[in-house]
Amino acid sequence: MNIALIGYGKMGKAIEEIAVQRGHKIVLKITIDNTEDNTVDNIRKADVAIEFTGPDSAFENINRCFEAGTPVVSGSTGWLDRYDEAVWNCREQNGALLYASNFSIGVNIFFEINKRLAQLMATQKEYDVAMEEIHHTQKLDAPSGTAITLAEQILAVNPFKKQWVNQSSDEETDLQIISKREDPAPGTHSVKYHSSIDDIEIVHTAHNRTGFALGAVLAAEFLAGKRGVYKMADVLSL
Image (cartoon, rainbow, N blue to C red; front, top):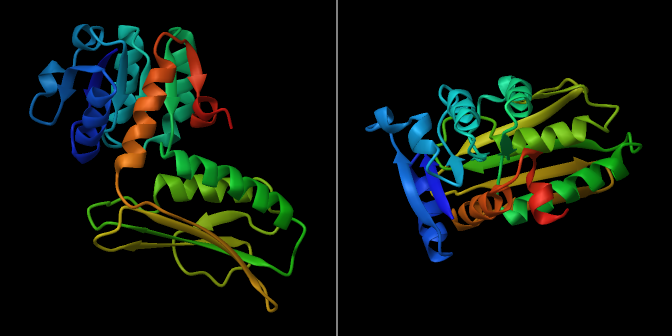
């Protein structure tokens, strides 16, 4: 399979290593130094594109892939206010899109556990829920996309919480997310339900980027040749 890497930072390099190990070929690498190569014609040479850039360029990159007719896997964060628009564009142009806030197999299983626990706790008013996420200091966005996904899963079923906030809060209806930036810390996410009697806590800790990179390659393998909008749950049959 021929892969275009739109974004070739630490994650792009980790994806490249695993993709090559799995027998794939990287036919395009886009960095900030060769943006002139980020064209429809060049993207069209790939069977699938993997897009890891930033909030200012992700939406444009994704739409360029639709124009090229190349399925695109995206893990960029900070652009999701335009996600619905991207989905519409994808379907309008008969494209293929798979977005995930986190491609790690373990994290996606963690998402499913979080959803189930949130459902079980939805009627337990005596428990308050709060979240914490820890990442390396080079991660500038806060909270992380993974933390937002976890929070939105809770808010979807918890009648006592109305919104998430990225700070300490004494407001009962706020779902508190505390973001810490420490080195070295590839990523830890925890969800804690607290009562005067006991605590229930689930935690996921990443040890390195390998899990994220492998998941992105698995997503690309899944998406190649397809049309439509998918999620990691489709890749992993969760």
